Image (cartoon, rainbow, N blue to C red; front, side, top):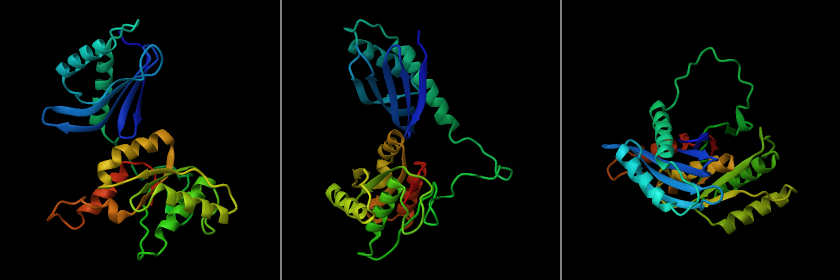
Length: 269
């Protein structure tokens, strides 16, 4: 018999947390295949006597009762020496049922035309970064695009005006970097902050390589876990590298990049 639990969206995956037993079941990289809906499953303990890592990530078929039974047996063997007995089959049943319902529901149907007047901000940075949208910075090499993005990151992190334009709100920033290094961004942030006469803020940094759409699961999880409100992808050219197959439409790469960014519900540039 299973006890009360909390089911939440984390990035592009889903998580089930129980207090009794203190365990967390998490699935991500969810995709449809010919024999069902599959995902990567991670099982962790959140308090004693359970270890922090129990199993995963492992490929798991959410649609298969046979897979659930074999995984429940495996988890039972992994925790057999603990003083707490766990109904692993029941826990997996809850996770699979709720995740499949969420996947099949998809994005809810909404209606336009009679919505009340929005009172929220239309811009993350006034007249520069539209709230919740993707903004591309164009210019020649050496045209200060990266420096401009770094300045926007500092201003959103500190709440200071960006070239005279006020941020609508202050929040955390994630910098996805294809071109430079952590040390280089750190130096830019410190120099820009000194010029603004403010203590340098902490900006989340992730080194990237390869097509960005292949990393969107990890990025979405970071955004969810750290409450990021602005994402910077530097640069779009390298984020597109390898995104389109040979002979594909010339727009295929940029389409994949923008489609991936739509899965991350934050402002991006």
